[in-house]
Image 1: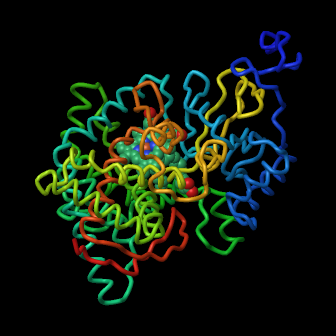
Image 2 (image 1 turned 90 degrees about the horizontal axis):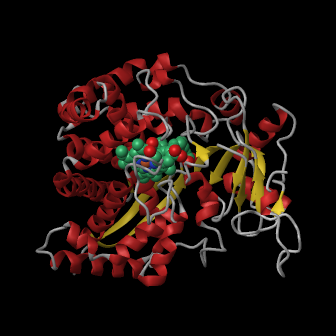
Amino acid sequence: QRHRHARASASATDRHEVVSPKRRLPLRKVPGDHGPPLVGALKDRLEYFYGPGGRDGFFASRVRAHRSTVVRLNMPPGPFVAKDPRVVALLDAASFPVLFDTSLVDKTDLFTGTFMPSVDLTGGYRVLSYVDPAEPNHAPLKSLLFHLLTHRREHVIATFREVYGELFALMEGELARAGKADFGERNDDAAFGFLCRALLGQDPADSPLRDEAPKLITKWVLFQISPLLNLGLPKLVEDGLLHSFRLPPALIRKDYTRLADFFRDAGRAVIDEGERRLGVAREEAVHNILFAMCFNSFGGMKILFPSLIKWLGRAGGRIHGRLATEVRNAVRGNGGEVTMQALAEMPLVKSAVYEALRIEPPVAMQYGRAKKDMVVESHDYGYEVREGELLFGYQPMATKDPRVFARAEEYVPDRFLGEDGARLLRHVVWSNGPETASPTLQDKQCAGKDFVVLIARLLVAELFLRYDSFDVQVGSSALGSSVTITSLKKATF
Ligand code: HEM
Ligand code: 243
């Protein structure tokens, strides 16, 4: 009796088959199965982490096997970390956006997927990233982070240029000494220093954290998401331990306390704002600011910036020349300063950044629980989903869907230029929402969306103000790419 209302009335195209309510697509049962309890989950986990095609191959093989871009499968980690690994996987650009519709999906505790890390790792609080918009503290906490990101907006560009200018100077020195320079480690140091100086007005180097925060944070992130990562350890150790059990929060308590002490002090102005204007308790603000700065922002920059350097590096000299020309003309036209106006006059920089976010969304996986029985529509079929089922989207297959993007597997830096390019932007969804939308207090779109796009543009601008071209070597790592710079050709025009 469900969906009777959607039965086709006699028309030329749908011959009385049951169709989806919105687009009248033929209905199909979601193919694929989860296998027997435990065994099915373990098989899928081993293929996901250690199968020949890697993560992409895992999902692609399911699409091929079932000739369907919406399939059932088990997501890691499964036993003994997650209670239930079963998901309905959305593997195309048409079905993925159901995850953005908070009237259809509940996002409670799904930030990291089928398991939630212990709240002992976040000061005893369920921080905003795990909170559904229907919960009463979602809006005040998101407002607090909007404030964090904007209250010192006039310091962001200058601080970025200072800190990342220093990063490039250090990279030049290392290149001269060793013939190559690792980007990742320097980026970690720069990212945290930049974030604290720009958003809090405090240099962590002048605090008891000294220069240790990036290492502490990386370890703390590992304690939260080790069940999801491929660390390159021997398979038996990695899968038998790190993917099967949680690391005990007690082992990182001291480190976390040092970070919390720093933010309790450095974040005073933002904490005050939370207490006075938003009704957020001071300690809840401390741990939410810490999480936003260390997990969301530092973690995000740790993945996105090497990715951006990788794709730009591989794009080659001709595109470097076009970017350098655009950046320098825009800066010259704005009194020799990098300003918001100058950035607005860099369409190729904007497009190249969007294209990196499209081809390699920094956070690949999103989840939402069906709030009611519904039909999820892909390009060709409607799929019936029951209330309570877990929907999972593998974003790279949405943003590299060949039905939406031509040459989907290629980095095309000028893809988003012009009117036709702009029409594609709604399919860029790294922020858990279309690039054409803005995060609100009612949805789960990334609070840092505008900030992230801004600093990514600033990185590209800084790079091409300083250099005509550069070369990279790329490897993989637990979080994103490992990028080594092998040459930096100083600006000649
Ligand atoms: C949510 C990605 C940077 C704050 C999200 C989500 C994604 C994401 C995919 C949705 C998670 C979900 O499924 O629920 C990224 C990436 C970043 C980045 C790729 C950097 C490259 C930032 C920054 C902030 C931030 C700089 C700073 C405040 C948040 C918050 C949420 C969120 C608070 C939850 C929003 C809500 O509850 O309404 N982010 N993010 N993110 N992000 Fe980001
Ligand atoms: O392979 C991967 O994609 C590893 C990343 C797992 C991330 C877990 C889920 C986090 C969800 C959203 C994250 C948003 C960002 O603000 C920051 C990501 C930083 C991860 C360390």
